[in-house]
Length: 201
Picture 1 (cartoon, helix red, strand yellow):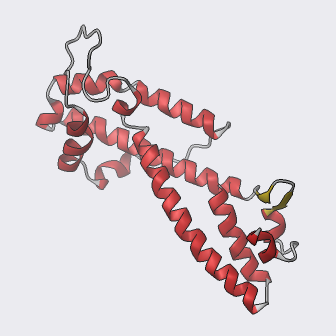
Picture 2 (cartoon, helix red, strand yellow):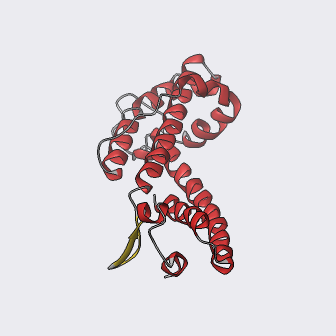
Picture 3 (cartoon, rainbow, N blue to C red):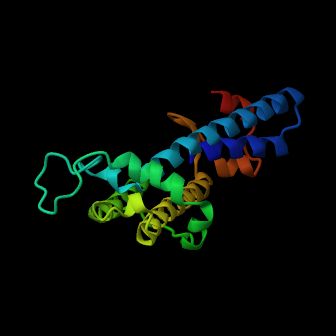
């Protein structure tokens, strides 16, 4: 949200400010903000997709491990076979596109949304082990492909939804620190004088 807000502030400033030195600073800062935003989106994409991989939200992260195992699930070496080997061999972007859900808004905090997302992912842990036990990942069965494509599509949709929400929320941002903050809304309507000095602080 802050990444988008600071980028928007630079873009707005370039609409209203005529001073060449100030415009030069804003243009350089806009480019810097774009790079930072792309970097942060990359980090976010990694964590959101990790949060949709069932083995990332359980103590049974790479085999059932040293726990009660009444169903005799695999004890070792599932993680890479599931998330890397299988995906690279059997899943393509075209498999996900028809499964991508429409945008879903969320009435709550990012923390609440993340909690709900991780809890939903956890409901797929045992199914992952059942498919592994049936050698579905090793054999590339239709059921395994469908399961993995659905998980990946859910992760892609969540990332898209969270980015869209961050963009929308950025419009309400207050920029700056401590007691000295300015609203993005005022910047975007040209009400802030001395914008470059404000952004440099």
